[in-house]
View (spheres, rainbow, N blue to C red):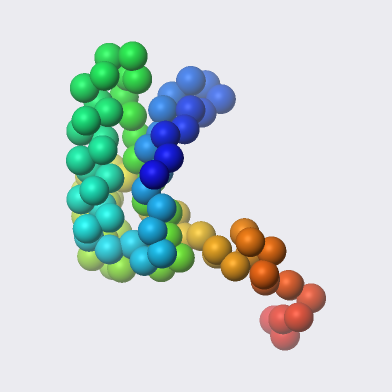
Length: 87
């Protein structure tokens, strides 16, 4: 979904899903394999970003050295107002 470059010049492929499942990890693994063939990109790392990430997907991602990040989409869109929460 996204190919980003860090401030120190490294490349990161980000797979964005609503629910992080094994198929998302598999898809990101394929992207990383293809991107890794480009000598100009160097070593590309991966991040699976989702609202929820299944335990099996986390395990597989960890085995493949892919970072998992949980994202609150409502907060990102500005739909979540912290002042309306009880806690």
